[in-house]
Image (cartoon, rainbow, N blue to C red):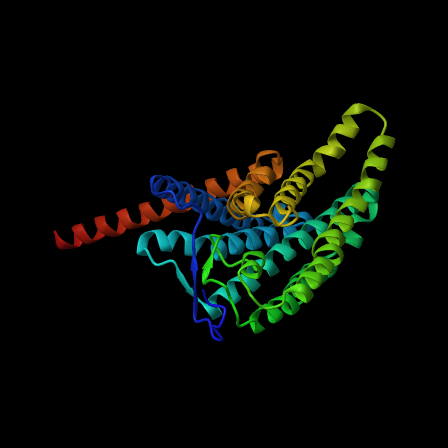
Length: 331
C-alpha cells in the first residue's frame, strides 16, 4: 500500500498475462506481429516515397498513417518485449508519463488522419474534376500538419493533471504499457475532475469529432455512388474507398472495447486484450488492407522490387569486375 506515498519513482508493468506457460508463446507472437508491422509499414512508406505513381494525396496520408502505426506499436510494445528478455518490469515515473502522452497523441492523430483520408475520398468521388485543384500539396500538408499538432496538444491537459497526482494505492499497473485509465484506477487522489475532462475530450474531441468528420463525407460518397449508372461504375467507386472504410471500422471497434466498456474489475483483462489488438494487430493489418486490394501499390511494389534486383545485379557485376581486374594485375 502506498496511500501515504508522496513521490512515486517507478511503476511495475504487469504485462499481458501472469500465466508462466503463456509467457514465451505470447512473447514470440507479439515479437512476430511487431516485426511484421515494422516491415509492412516501412515497405509501404518506402513505396510512397520512391514511386512517382504513388505521389498523390491518398498515399501522402497513407504514408503519415504508416508513421503513426510504427510509432504507436514501438511505444506500446517495446517495453513488453524488453521486459520478457531482461525480466525487469519496472518503468520510471517520468518514462511512464511520456509513454502515456505519446501513445494518446498518436491514437488521436491516427483518428484525425483517417478523417482527412475520408475527406480526400469525398473529393475524389463527389468532385473528381476538381480533385487535384482542391487536394493540392499545400492543402494536404496543412491537413496533415494540423492533425499532428492538434493531437499532440489536446492530450496535454489530462496527462498534466495525472502527472500532478502523488498518491497511489499500488505501484503495479494492470496493463502492458502506461495508459491513462489503468493509472487512474490505482490513484488515491481525487480523479473526479480528470474523469469528467476525459469524458468531455473522449466525446467531443478524441472520439466523436473524428468519427463524424469521417462519417459525414461517406454519407455524400454513398449518395454519389448510388447515383452512378451501372453496377460496374458503382463497384469501381466503392472499391476506391473500401480499404479506408475497413481500416476505420476496425480501429473504432477496438477503441470502443478498450476505453468505452464499463469500469469493472472483470473487464480489466478484456480491455487489455482489446488494447493489445489495437496496438499490435491493427497497425499490422493496415498496410495489408491498403496493399492487397490496391493495384497501384502492387505495381509500385513490383517496380521497386525490379529496381532493387537490377541495382543488386549491377553491384555484383561491378564487384566481380573489380576482383577480376585485381587478380589479372597480380598475375
